[in-house]
Length: 260
Image (tube, rainbow, N blue to C red; front, side, top):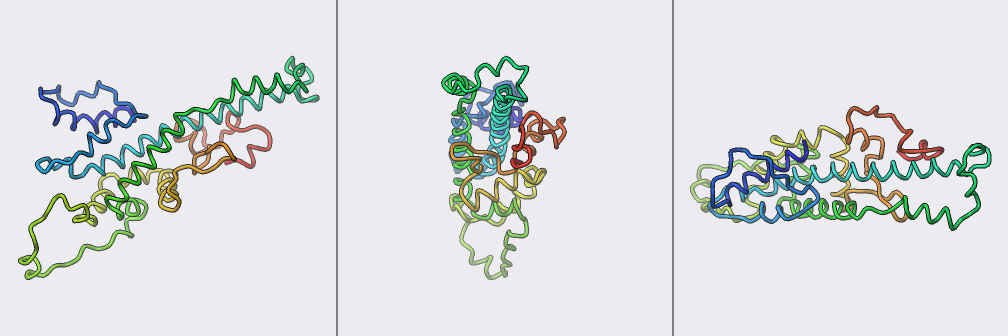
């Protein structure tokens, strides 16, 4: 579904730029969720093309699509780590008493070699994290009311009331003025797709974290990161058929109590 959503967002831009007609709503071309090439295509502003004036709305939807992919990668990484820790339980003198894994107990070089083969860092995590932060930063520079407005619509200022005299003296609207319609755009964003970001508290937590720190993930330890909403919620978001409290494939031992 995320793939179809991204294809849909990019289709209309491709249709505008194509020199020949495209099949109506042809979503067969899969855009790269982890790529960036379409971002500049969507952002290129054209005075005669209204769609390009509001690229930041597309950016907000793409940021969410990318975050959902990031969730899936982080959850998969956590499952691999939990599987490794489960494997190591075989080296415990009591728990692994009947396990052949007990043979490598105390053999640090073998254990470290196996760990280096199993626990590999996925560079896609870093790429997606940086992309999402860059997208949100770009949107926030364009309209500083939009992201706070999606988090809380009451943060959007009321539109100023103009008298007839003001309207007569008002300069002609310039579509290239970046901040001309910040309030209207923020309200439109909340009314049109704010519910998508608010359908899950995890997503608004990401936006709040970004506004506070400029980041979209938190440190799990000194070398790795985790979703701000925790692995249980992220795993459920990735697979809604999953029981929200299921921990057995994510944590082992005390980690199930300390890492949420």
